[in-house]
Length: 353
Image (tube, rainbow, N blue to C red; front, side):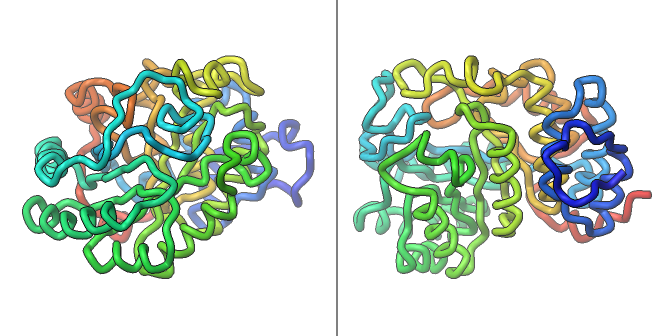
């Protein structure tokens, strides 16, 4: 059943997930009550929930999977105090620290992304925002990468001004990643050196410059289910095209070390799959990417996540290791899915009855 107006008793309402998926495919936008109910449904409902999420995924993305490759182009040395990040000024984690890598290394990363059959090459720096030298390096290398390897480019450079966003658009950057990370209410619990509104301003600058938005969050930082719902619906309001869903890897030496295990709701594979399904229901046309922490928290159930999500990071993350690319290729093949480089399937897929 579809729900009446939002009520606090979401967990007590019984849902037919297939019917709710049909409603979404007919244009229904999930309410907070419906969205919360997905996160709180019983584990015995998970097979039906994933089947329903797959109906939505199949309508807009078929059985395709888009691959992303991350390049940690500048590591550590960040003045921000984000509690989840091993590169922040408050982190005691033992990680490599270096300034922006060379042109040759950026090109080599692009070559590896192309060899791994990725659609998108993500260039990431640790910073409050890029300085003039970093902006010049990025805007100079992007046209060369695109001409040589025909990759989409996603830049993750921190907070951006309108002028910086326009410069990234002019050089050929396709999208900018800047995660909301959590709800507005919970944001001060994970960072104090900038605000949730600062992040919204960057996303608006990116949109005004004519680029796609890549923005998602991190689960397992002590947030409530309501915070997860608020984030998912905020991303819907922003019409975010690409949503990476991360699961906190509690790195030793970071302020949030251990929170994913002992927080308000400890992460487990079944809850992670409910989160991915919820994001698919709430943002049916958006690319949903299973991002950092999937190996740690979804574990042997990772293939099931692709019945809701349609994208993966392949290889390593910023300062943590991912599983071997060969394992991801095998997972995609075993599911009967295929890697794609384009979004045209979203326009061509027939309706699901």
